[in-house]
Every structure is written in structure tokens, then in C-alpha cells.
Image (tube, rainbow, N blue to C red; front, side, top):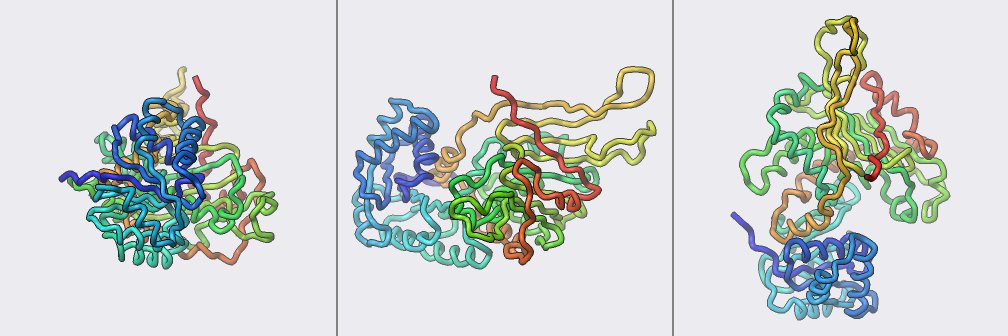
Length: 461
């Protein structure tokens, strides 16, 4: 049954960096592509006027995503602004005035999590029914703080009206993992422990922390990308098919999968820190924060019993890419007396910055001898030019569609997996910038290796 569409959109943190780089382009796209025609109200404490916010929006679009004059004119007409402190009760009185007749607003909090409770309480006093709340990650700093955040938000909003945004889930290639798996019957019979030897997921960033030193030194790779992005990709790759067409069918299966992932321990993780990290502005001297993490995971289910899953993510690596490699088992007997690499048969899924799905096969070399070579059949290969993730996610939230958002039990399952390795005493291992991380990662993967290192992105045509 369709849910009612939100009749206004309010975004807190309207003068911030996230709004400038992501939210204004997303709103522009919603106006241009989906006919968004409701009040759009920015809230911040910057001493700005509406004209200044409108100019900021125009500059944002010129720098990020492109400016369509007709669509921007409509966006500017819909735009409102409340310049006030989030702790001031009068802020919400003014917001109520700007909402006018709207009864079902969507409130998006692009603000620090420490302010979520204050703002949620203020919003709960606006009146009306059906208001929705979108919150940005991080959803807590650990499992207990995530529980505390849930208790605060649930005091003022029902769980079905809370949308925990992870922009990675809005990416077209990430959604394509689910689509490719469940729209092609050929994969399901072999998508299990009988035919799959191991799985590798790599998220490489060819740059360091840049100007995010203070934030990153309080976060680290596990909290920044592993606990959320990487585990969500793992869930999409290994979950069972959704049952029925209920709006929560996909999230139900993701929750079941993540609850079956065995919690990490220090024997199954390698933490690294690139050389030079501690000289970056905002980073504490002697910092033990990891900029790289590699982990070995297991899923305790019939489908995936004893199949090792290797995930690594890091900064200052040789390139920027996100790639999945599913290695299939070799036949029970090599009929032609060859020594064949374990990764000879594989499915490779490239998520970014370009997009590809490829199948690795072994074929006979031309000639008299029965010997083969490994080739890769490219099923699809293209630049990533799809809808921006924030546009998709905000549009879904406006319609009450929660498939691509974190749910309370899913977030809890993700924290459960990493809880024991969040505060390890052993310092991270130094690695050179431009390398693939500490050498200890080779010991972690052992005979299931070697690691599959993604290649550079496709050249632009």
C-alpha cells in the first residue's frame, strides 16, 4: 500500500559542507527530474538571509552537478530559510510558520549526532502527524551509544518514520548487486558454500585524510566505512532472496544475514596507518587510529558455512576503486593435469569509480596441446553516470520507502560484528603511502590469496 508523500522538506545544517556538495544538487535533481513542488526549508545558525542561502545553492550547483536555470528558478521559489540556534525553542516556532499548511514534513538532519536529540524533541512539538526524520551516519560511536541514540529518537518518532541514511546504499552499482543476483536464475544454484571458495571486497582510496584530520582521528576506518558501507555491501552480496513485495522485505533479509555474521576478533583483523598520517592537521601526536583495515569474516548459516570473506578498506592506497571478487571452487579434478590458480573462475563486480560486471573463465589455448588460459568475459562495462545517491535517497524518504535506509536492528547487527575490535590495544601497523597496506594482510588471507588488487578506472571516452 503506497504511503503518503511528505508535503515539505526541512534540512538542518543548510549552510554546511554536506549541503553544499550533496544536498543542493539532490534537491535540484528532485525538482528537475521528479517534479518536487513543496516548501524546502533550510535551517542553520550562520547569520545568513534567504538571499544568501539561495546564492549558496546556485554556487553549489555550478560546482557540483550542473546548473539548469529553469529548475533552479523553481528551486529558489520553493526555498525558505530559518536562521536560528537549534537549542532555542523559538527556532521551531519560526519553522512551524514557514511550514504553513504542511502536515507531513520530512526533516533531514545534516548536523552532528550530539544535536539529534535536541532537534528531534523540538520537531516533536510542531504538531501534525506523519512527520519523518532522516539522520546522517554515524549512528553512534559504538553499540551502546547507538542504542542510546535509538532510545532518544524513538521518544519522538516511531521507528517506521526514522530513516538512517547511508549514501552508499543509494549508489546505482550497489543496487545492481541485488538486481543482478535475483533477476538471473543462473546465479542462485551456485551462490553458496558448495561452489564458492571465498569472497574479497576491496574499498581503496588513493588519497589521505586531506582536511578531515580532526574528524578522522576520532573515527578511523572501521567506524568510517567498514561498519556501515562495507557490511552493507556484504549483506547485499550474500543475503537470501527477499520474500514478497513488502517494503521491508529486503531489509528483513539483510538483517537476518548480518545477525549471522560472526563477530570479529583480533586474530581476524589487521589495522594499518599510512606513513605521514600523524603530521596531518588535526591529528593527535601518537594517534592509534587506523587508516586501513583488513578483516576475515564468516557467516554462520547453511548457505555460507566455512566460506571466508575478506574485506579491506584504506586510504593512501595505489588508486581509488571499489571492487568485489567472488572466487568459485575449481572442479573436483583437473582433467588436463594442469596447475590452475584458485581465482581462475570468478565473478568480478566493479562498483566504482567505473562500473563493470565480469565473469572469469578458463578456455583452451589455440594449438594441439590441451592447456588453457584464464580470460574474463565482460558482461557490462561503463562509466558511472547514474542518479546521484542523495537524490535517490531523499526522494525515497519523501515517499516513505525505507529499503535503502538503515533499520534499528540492522545497525545494531553491524555494531555487534565490530564491537570487539573497536578499541584494540595493539597500535596500527605502519604502511607506505601508495602501497596496498601492511604486509600482514597477506598472512591474514593465507592460502585463500592472493589479494585481488583492482586496476585503474576505465579511461573516459
